[in-house]
Length: 280
Ligand code: ZN
Image (cartoon, rainbow, N blue to C red; front, side, top):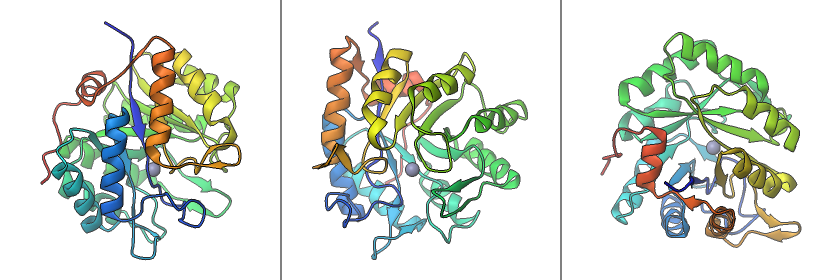
């Protein structure tokens, strides 16, 4: 079997604005259209955040539901991965309400608390981490364990030991978020080597190191994440035209490396997903 690599697209995130890049999709309609284009370019997973009518991050379950409904209506079988963080007014409840109602195949699980971008505390209390893990187990949602710093790998290991997370775990290594680890090749290698042997993992770099981190991730056996949540620039001084532009580059790199871009069906197999999100 060919070496298959999964592309996740993170089209919006919580922070980029239309002022920084007018091509960031904001409304559920824009997000759904963007995701459809990314699917056709090779993305197997979409990692979604929502914005309110002012473009500010929100955990409003109705917005998530609208976006997922539109994506489903377009007939594509892309894996739905919903964020459980982002909005400044988020509570432990609102960070889970949408995943309870939608039951996406995947959702993000942040493996610890950090000082986010020197701006505020990105709070993930021990109580919340236990509760979120149990919600995901109950709802059959595969956690995407987001790692911003080495200590978070050990924190996640604790939750595997206590049964809050189930092995094999899927990790997303986030490099270059201020407050976490810098996006360097050494840091990527270091983090990757901390992961358990049965783990699946993906990585991305924010900013200039985006492409080098992507190339190294391919060489190390990882999967890729791209999109305007992480980078509004496609290259130095060049704003991204679309999220699909990032996906096309990732797909081309995978193919040039002699590997295969995983379809959503293949990605479900690789990640051990047991079901397809059936929200309508
Ligand atoms: Zn996110």
